Amino acid sequence: MTITPRPARIAGAFLLLGAACRSRPTPSTQAATPGQIVRPSVVAGRFPDENDRRAALARGAVPGYAGEMIEGCNYVVLLTDTLHQAAVARRYADGRWQRCAGGVVLVRQVKYDFAQLNDWYKGPFTAVWRVKGVTSSSIAIQRNRIEVGARPEAMERVRQLVASLPIPPDAIAVVPGMYFCVGTGGPSVIVRVRDEYGRPAAAGTTIVIQDGAYRDSVSGTRVLSNLIVGAGERRPGIYEVRLYKTGYQPVVLHDVKAPGDTVCHYAEPTDIRDVTLTPLR
Image (tube, rainbow, N blue to C red; front, side):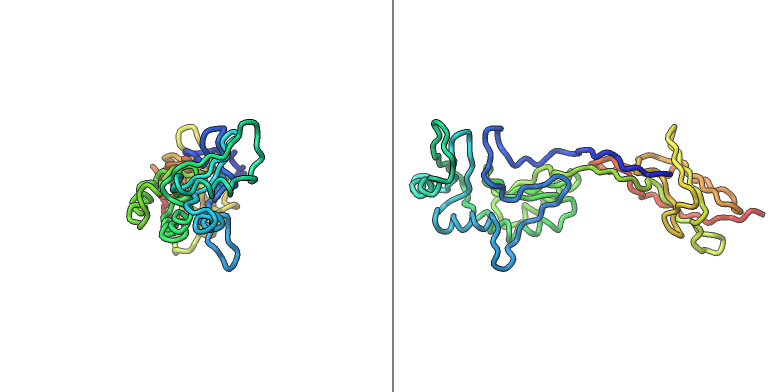
């Protein structure tokens, strides 16, 4: 059997880090890339990242600074105190953008400055990465919070952990993660095969699986290991499985289950059967 890669399929809801089509943040704090897990960027040695540069502004040159973005022709600076911090913020923003007709520097009130968000992000938030199913994270400037992307089956686990962290509830949100489904073949069903003496006997054993009209087979010359045979190309189903090996009686297995995962609906071998071959007499 020749296994050919399946075309990539996008699954689940995507993590959205932007806002309306005419509003975009300045260089991303930690943009998620499809198919990748984006872990928090922790400072190593003397090389600060973009998040640290923004946090340093909040602690020094622009007190209360929480980020900046371009909206149409306007340059928007987010601040925790627009009454007292606006003048400094406007001086900081002046000359940092190419003005278009009618564009001005605006300030907008938010609750948390970037230093606070960054301290949480690189401190207690890192515990979130121990939860299986987390796919991405970022400091979302426009929403003035930390966002963590998770697969559907992990959402509740991540929410429970987030609720236990010393981070204000409105400063962190669990959102649908970004990921690709990339079916690259592989077995839906696997069977462990031994001879009458208990020795691995997969070599030379052909496996044939069938679910309704679907049928797949793998020759005994292309076994997965000395012990294991498999077939199915990750297709979910409930299979009748037949094993054939020269000199041995055929084996039939019924109702071998290969459930698909909840995100991409690809089967992983979970109903693994053990077979002992019986020699022909």
